[in-house]
Structures are given as C-alpha cells and as structure tokens.
Length: 83
Image (tube, rainbow, N blue to C red; front, side, top):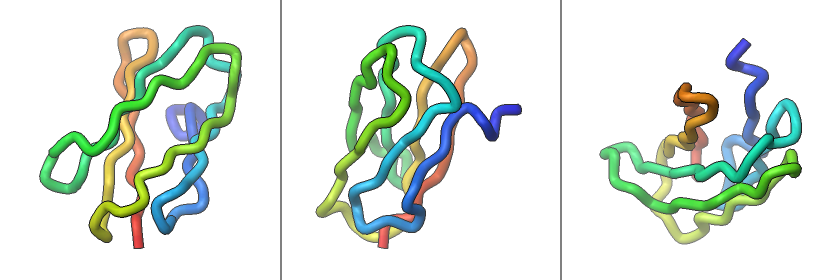
C-alpha cells in the first residue's frame, strides 16, 4: 500500500524531521517540499541504497507542508505539520 512507501516523524515537527522509506531506495530520488500555497520551499536529493533521511526546514512559517517525490513513474506525497 502507498502508506508504506514512506513515513515522516516526528509529525508535527519544529522544522527538522526524518523521512523513512519502507525499503532502501533503488536510485537517487529528488524530494520536493511545498508550502500550503504550492510554493517550493526546498528540494533535496535522497541518495540510493539508504532508507532514512533528515530534512531541515527550520525557519519556515508554521503550517502544513507537502513532501512529494516520484518513483517508478508514480507520485507520492505526505503532509507534515510545522509548529
């Protein structure tokens, strides 16, 4: 199920959070973070053969952010709350 593709914790977060995938990434994957209005806040490349990554967007406004990436032609997204 898509829910197992990746998870974010802690969520809510203060701006630093972990992204954990259900398995090792088969190739480098670009992850993009958008704010609630759709503006790109950050893009980060997660290296292949790793499973867990740290994202730091400290300093952004409080609110809901969308974490998105593409894999095997499918797009996956999760929201993270920054407080």
